[in-house]
Length: 245
Image 1 (cartoon, rainbow, N blue to C red):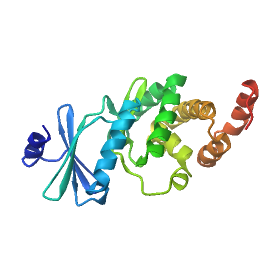
Image 2 (image 1 turned 30 degrees about the vertical axis):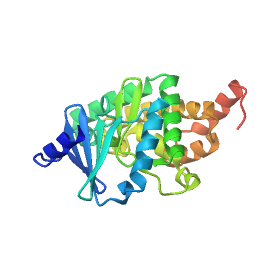
Image 3 (image 1 turned 180 degrees about the vertical axis):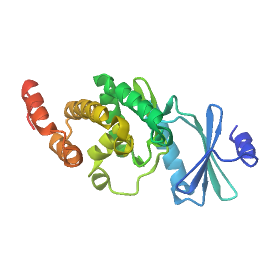
Image 4 (image 1 turned 135 degrees about the horizontal axis):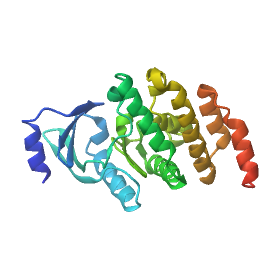
């Protein structure tokens, strides 16, 4: 099956380009092409395939890996396209006032999600990093959203030690859920956006507490850049739920 898509890619313009790889979208299928990328050398590729299959068996929301093949020194991955759409369409949302409104709509959707959504997001993020794979939070396109669910895509092998990689995990989680730098780009809706982002941060923090995460680190990594007054809220939340920091 993968051979057919490799052949089609030779005659198709790539859909997008990432770090040392090209992406081709064919309906519900995605072909990733790694040209000389160390991430998919002969030693590492089988490990990555095995890890991704194990994560899928555990119910972690990642793009389903179908097949892998290396041809003439070029590595290919065939995946199912992640369900939904980009968590935040950076180009669209930052383009004009209409885009700003669409950004606000997406924030409303994320902020209205229930505890299960945030619990799953935190759980899957940790599962992926603990497995040996790496998440790239620098692009909102690496996360696909359908109501009730976020799917992680563009995963590579983790090269940094786990503890070092997790040093700023909470800042990365909160940044992804707010849409990176969009709050400062979508100036026409910034006031409303801040209130929605605060709700998102509160729900994310509650999920981190339920997962026995480091809430003090979360408060520091979010309030440090946003000054939303989360510390007082979570002190009260922890007292009300008989938890301690």
